[in-house]
Every structure is written in structure tokens, then in C-alpha cells.
Amino acid sequence: MKKILIPTDFSENAWNAIVYASELFKDIECTFFLLHSYTPAIFSSIEGVPANTGMEDAAMVFSLNSLKELASKAKKELRVQKHYYVNKVSTNTLANEVKEIVQKEKIDLVIMGTKGATGAASVFMGSNAVRVIKTVKNCPVLVIPEGSDFIVPSEIAFSTDFKRFYSYNELQPLVDFAKLFDATIRIVYIQQEEGTLTKEQQFNLNMLDKYLGEVKHYQHTLTREDSVADSLKVFTKELDIYLLAMLHYKHSFVERLTREPIIKRVAFHIQIPFLVIPELGMSSAFSNNSSKASQLEKV
Image 1 (cartoon, rainbow, N blue to C red):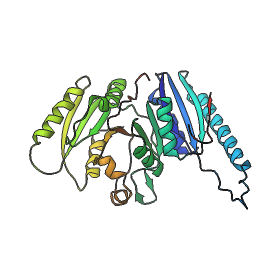
Image 2 (image 1 turned 135 degrees about the horizontal axis):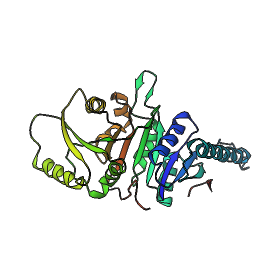
Image 3 (image 1 turned 30 degrees about the horizontal axis):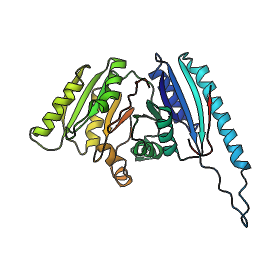
């Protein structure tokens, strides 16, 4: 059984992620861990008297009841017999709680809904998604942008500069997605300057080609537009790409985007589902595979 973790704040974006995940894995037996993480009110103490915890208990009960209603809604409206729900409430920070659950429950994939833009200013993605991507090092994270309807990802773009050697374990989530949907992987190389690939880049391309040999894949070289982000937006739109994948490692494009100063300067926001694969990730999205004040309940 596959284990999928879906953080929720009970917003429309979070519900959209649940709907998307249900469609994505409708033919696969899954347990969905629905996580709500919140920061309890800070109560003051007078002369050493402990802070009142009544409100904290009430918040915990409210959150658990809200998750129960959410799970019931998912079962009633989405109607996938193979899907089960586990409710999780925590007062830990979201990113740290996600990290702990991933390790404890051997989660295969984290799916998050997020806003792609705020007002007139484009942003990379919501701050919670950014923190989770930066914190979780051993599990793929699939970010679902605001308003995304499920479309079978028959075309998957994998962006790389061929400057890093990829291991087979790291590429396994990408291969698994391609197999699940009989999808074509489009390896996207955005050329920074004219010239052929270096020997190192060519070697990495050859190894990538070998690892992806079991699925249909093609390599595309793009001339850089004003930015890497602009080039990717044009490419994904022209080829009707419905899933963009990247590896998250030191000095990668993902790492640069998740730095706040860079986010504010780069006009790039998530428009299609975005799969972030961790460096040296040993977990596959389809493999057989505790915090303070938290409760767990299976539905």
C-alpha cells in the first residue's frame, strides 16, 4: 500500500490537492495521511503559574473534528474504495512535522496545494511549500498549484543542466510516474551559452539516457530566454506539459528558487504540478514501502 502525506489548512487549495491526489492514484491502494499543523496561542504566566492549556485542548479537538469532516467528505465525494485516510494533528511547525511523519511512517510522496501568485506579484510558490521542500530530504514533494484540474500527465518535463551525475535511486520517482501513466519524459536542457556539452555533461547525459531506458524519453535543448524560468514556461506551454520535475540538490535551480531574495526577483510561479525530487532520495513515490501534542486516527 502506498503512503501519501497531504498537509491541509482546510483551504480550497488544500482540498484541491486531495482531489488531485485521489485522481492521480485512483487505481492504486493508498493510505492518505491528512495533516493539520498549527501554532497554539501563547498564554502568559503570572508568578510562575503555568499557562492555561484549556484553549490548546479545544484547538486540538477542533482540528481533529475538522479533519474527520474532511476525510468523510473525501470518501463521500471522491468515492475511491482503495483509499484510506489517517488524520494527524500537531502543534509542531509544518515543515518539521512533515519531516517526522515521512521518516516515521515511511511516506512515499508528499502532496501539497499552494498558491502560484499573490496579487499582481508572481511568486515561486507558497511559503509552506517552500519550507517543506527545504526541510524534507528523503521524500519527493508534489506541489499542486491553485486551481489545477487533474489532467493525466502524458508528457513530463525533467529540467537539468547535465552538470550533476544522477543516481538511479534519485530518478526512480520520475520513472515510476512515467510508468504509471505511460508518459513520455522530456529531458529539458536550457543552454546557457553557445557550444557543445562538456565531457562531464555528455557523460551525465549518457547515464541519464541509460537510467531512463525503460520509459519513452527525448532530449530537448533550448536557447535560454530572459531567464531559465521563462524558458521553462514557454516549453511546458508549447508541448502541453502537465508535470514538471526537477532534482533538488546544492546549487540546483530549485535551491536557488527557494531562497527568499531570489524568489522576490524571479518572476516564476507554479502553473502546472511540480515534482521536486530530493538528492540521493532512496524513497520511490510508488515503492513498497512523534511530535509534541499530536494525535493519530485512522478512518
